[in-house]
Length: 258
Length: 215
Image (cartoon, rainbow over all chains, first blue to last red):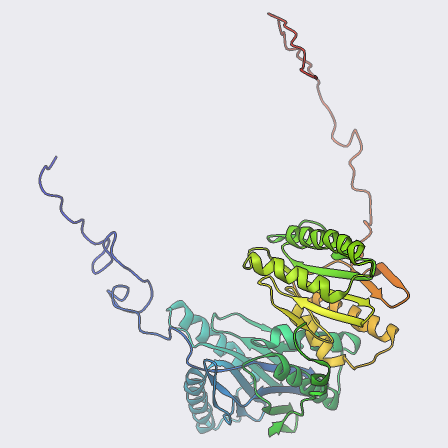
């Protein structure tokens, strides 16, 4: 039994935290938890919603062309859609810098694959699967890519529409929407698909446009210029910049608050 | 009505009476919406007797907002107030902190974005009554099917100059399923091999009678 001055207990493991001391798990290497955190703490330039709808013979995804800096409409002509290859497109919301990094990585991957020259190209499902692993592993290291990504494609006669977010949550659905789109556009998209489970290309395009308009009306961080990417067996077609025609006629019915 | 992540009342009535020509839908804290609308309904009735006139929607609006502002948002009542009076039909949305908006169409609550999306898509000025009822039904349905805080059925209250329709329910969106079979196990399903009844010998030691004070 030792009596004397209280000695600080040793750290739990070599280079680990001592009781009562600040510790944040995550990061690689010994003592990573003791080093100050250096990952994406919060997104800076952000993109709003991305929408996706499957139709008979392909998919269509859309995103507006704005990068917000908090509440400032900073960049009003940026593309948030990426054409991966002839069968896949990708749209991202969230941090734009992380999307740019992702674009760099994916483009390099596509080049490397072309260099192989084996006749194979990445399928949309493959990209989705790969991205899911990337996003989940990043989040597990507490250094996420702060994005919510929609992957759309048409491969081997089948449409594909997948979602991956910064936590690594991934799923496929006939309609997708990120951000505020999930609250405003998804109900409309689901209602349309419930009445008519299989849409034509024109109907899908129409639905997307109606939803983009409603997002412009009700999402305070959205913009009225947008791009649409359609993927069919013929390949990828990116239309844009398109402008939404908003109807402000009801303004005449509004006067005061009482 | 939800209590956290559990449904407390699967069929609660959210359209509250304010006066014969004014009704108020309440979202937010159920007790707050109920008591607030009841209080203003009571005061409005007294006010109407004093003025000798049919109450006006703007009066109910003013009374509601002045109370809610006084409580600085602690009364969690998000209301959609509508009615028809001598000056015509009026629709207001009233927020818990006491701000109000006077608009052609409003939505409140957790399902408000889903419902508003439907309104923004399909609203036109000067709709017919049936068209309007269908639109409102579709908006609430969007909330029911896409918002976890909303569910069950759709009630509608149509207020006009000469009639009032309180249609509850207007649309039973979620009918409880019929159970397919009987799942009761009849006596004898599990064979009883032996039965042993043991009486507990309880000895009455003391007995006192104390009469209840019912004065």
